[in-house]
Image (cartoon, rainbow, N blue to C red):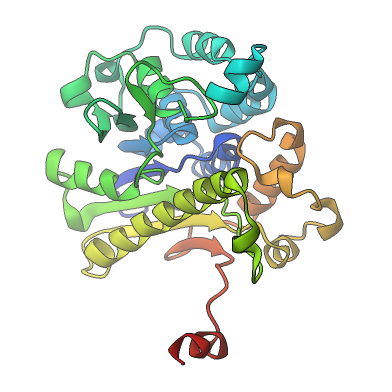
Length: 331
């Protein structure tokens, strides 16, 4: 009997963006495949992903196992994050050359188009000309090359050059596409509400809280890093709240969210030696030099999951404003 889908519901998968931190979601899905004894494309009927999440769901949809995807992350990320040799381009335009990215996507997905996939799929990208988020799915974009959809979704500004008019799907509110996955499945694919289950996987949440007085001293480069991190995390959490408020609280779908915060408390709970996590750069989306450490965190988190949890597993939260801190703003 299936652990994750014992009542034979329609199964939705959603994977957040997050660069190399997508390895966290991949290790969780590897655990799921081992428990179920079959690949994800035989577990899920619908898959949605943004950026690195687009790479994950595209790979799973074409039949690549989660274990194979983990191997690709560990062996190919350095090729994908290869700095452009042109100093002007690197400091003014974008950091990384896309040659390796295109080669890997071509080798991995070939000339497959969306309509050929055996599962329903949704990949997000930002259309800079139309000024809106695009949702690449099989009905309207059936003839689109899968590798083009994935490249569009992962073309993060400042990291990579755009894919024509398209940039990373995380530019805006859909770095976590779980809410749109529900909309697509229920209203366009006509999945029955009461018979739908969604599993949503995050890529880790970094706590970027500033110290008192730090904001006044932060320069433009510091703000760029802060805004990217906070914008992504806030968008991720907003999507989760919307799904729970509009569908879960009404008893219309079942929703499980798997996410962790990068904090000492969480590492201690997972049994990871705190002394081994001392470099804050470990959690950057392009920190390929720290892949092994990230993989340790990913495996420990996956070990913590059984997939029998009612609402999923979310470890760690942003610190809440204490009452005494709040009162000073009421004076």
